[in-house]
Image (cartoon, rainbow, N blue to C red; front, side):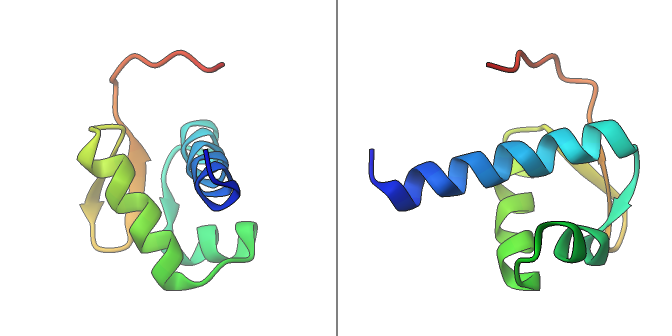
Amino acid sequence: MKASTDRMLTRIKSIYLYIKQEGTVTTNELVEEFGITQRTVQRDLHVLEYNNLVTSSARGKWRATAKKTSVS
C-alpha cells in the first residue's frame, strides 16, 4: 500500500474514533483537532458516511452511527 493511502486510512480511523468518543462534533472542531483543511475533513467524513459509520443530523454536525465496528 502506498504511504499516502496508509496515512489517509489512519487519519480517517482517527477521525472516526474521535467522533465516537466525543459524541457530536462539528466540522470545524475536526479541522482544529487534526490540523487539516476543511476540504480534507469533508472528504474523510464523506468516506465515513458512505460506509454508514457517521451521520449528520444538522449541517456541519456529525455523530457516529450505531453500526458495530471492531478496531484493530
